Length: 205
Image (cartoon, rainbow, N blue to C red; front, side, top):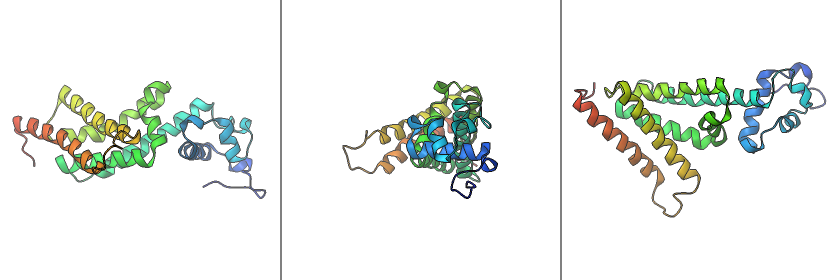
């Protein structure tokens, strides 16, 4: 947490790039990505906007840092979810962790999914980390080469599409359990991966 001065505002010695990035992440989660600005952030930290520039290059730079934090958070969730698991067990654990992160951190998730429109090269390169645990799960089914990329795209589309539709109220016309629907969605991917694995002689280990 932050180090506050005697008058309740952050002293210059307590203002670091780390505290600024942490405050930016909190502001984005509390107020939404659309409301994110250096002016609002400075008000949150009770410092002048000019003080922020002693540690960051600007709003775009700070947004990139917040995005890197979001990428790391999601990647760690996915890696932890699949650790020690294989095939279907890993696939469903990964899918649950992905959806849970998106629901718990919707504004940070927006940064991750909007990486290609934000024009922040360092963030775009970092976002590739998210694909690694997903690819590792797909590899367990014996999927390789271009097909591995295709299935990775299909799985991510299924997970992102379901969450986006859910968040936008697309499933509000029925009281049917959305968790069951999500599991069925991932089961469709699992069935395809298992069928492809059987054709290649990968029946499971």
